[in-house]
Length: 233
Image (cartoon, rainbow, N blue to C red; front, side, top):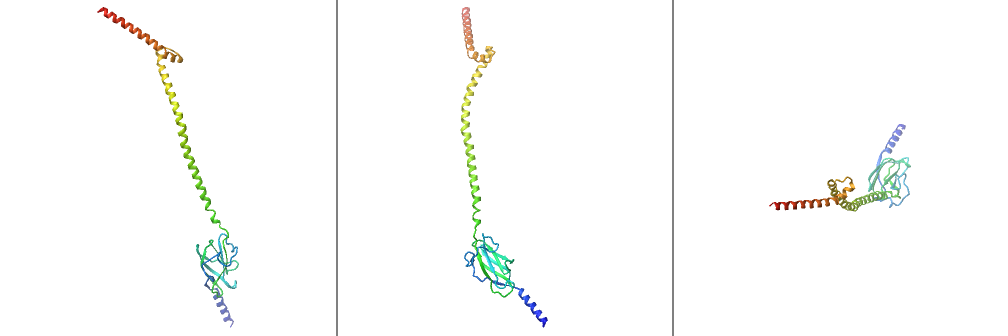
């Protein structure tokens, strides 16, 4: 008799450890904000995400989650296999803010449950993801516009204004000075002057007088020769 009781007890414990699958009691799709029971926080799920709290009803010492599979849109399927807060018949899941729960199936052990419950939700209260994308777009747009506009304008204006006036007055001065020095330099050689200052003056005055005198002498000598030849004839 005692032996039969031991065998029966062992069979009961083995049956209790077998897992089975049950559906969610609530109708889907659902949103965290649209669910009837909400709370500020769900365990350690951040406030920037929607939180979902599921419970397998019954004695927590006899009933426990083995696996929970949920599907969100957007987000896709998620599989949870760790349950320890506050008991193994509680499960917490996070989703994107505003995501819809479209499917939920649980694998449990113990008891003979027909479904499990969505206890409450914790809609996201902060949205940090909307601010960061605006910061990087403002910086690159201002930087290239200022550098490109400033560089070409400075390089084009400086050579166009400054270089032509400097070159125009300089060229006439050099050309007028060059003939005076070159014309005066051969005159001192013929006149025999020694100093640089006198060379310029003798080159402009003495050669003209000397040439005139020589020309007169040559003309006179020529006239004398012509008269003599005529007389000789």
